[in-house]
Image (cartoon, rainbow, N blue to C red; front, side, top):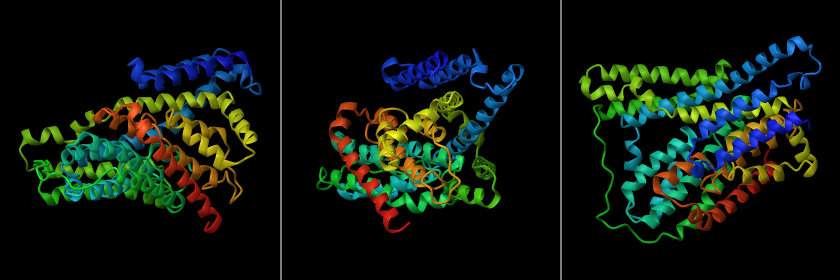
Length: 445
């Protein structure tokens, strides 16, 4: 490894460490990711010819410009998909589309609420995304459970269910979205082969946590009330089904048209935007301005988008200097090609460091095989396990996933409490899911 490559890796590792310690440094991880991205590419330009010895010296700079545009195009597909999906969810939520969630979860039994919340979160995160679903479910939880100790148990289960639900859907988790857009997993593949392992990874922790909850809630608890909306119930239902149904339609749109997934998201956003504008037409101007899509766009978390941009482009530098390929070869040789063990370790690592750059790195570490049925082929064991392990493994620590971080902030859950009470439970479910996937491959697929 050359000295310049060592410097590039050092900048990436320092940036990665600062991102992991965001709660300590108080510096937004998006800012660090952008600095890391520019720093790595700048170092590459110090001696670009060293990495492209086959090219004439006068064409290396032009080649790198083309390489950057290529990587930026790949990243943009993921970013536009996320921005569109986030906007759709914001439209549905701000116009009362999720009121049915509150009504569905109402019960006086503590264990019934646990199971309803677990399954509702699991399936919603597969349709929406685990971050948004976690926010919606925690807001509902606050109105249903007053006891703080009990609410923390429910909140922990929300994190587990959201991450497990996002793992089996091509649009449920950022890491699965990345793998799906890259084309290494297909909609049918993840739905049929990852669903049961993901379900097991949620059900087992739910069973264990259910022993901590007994009895019924006090009758005086604050039950949810429907939010005031300028739209009728029928209009809210139309908005909900257009938004959620549209997100479910995106994989179908990709299959039918062979267009990139973000085009399907833009189609759904355009339809939903048009419908809400029509609904707002006959309402008072003062009541509707704050909830029009043009105003809701300001609520989109652009810092998250910038973080993904910085991370994806920084990982691209490691690909260009052949670091990722070397790491992939090293892991394969160290574990004798045991993809269950390799992905199991990657899943544990995803609870310590952000799973987005981890998966982005794995996508560049291993080449896609053209041999049908091979572990590295499309929908092969390696890629499907990567989708499962990176998604579910992030639940082991509360800082290991976007869902965990947001719930940690909303409910003020401490790192120590989660590590002591929840981590081992998640690990049991995580291993059970991997075992379930192994049985599927041995007996069914």
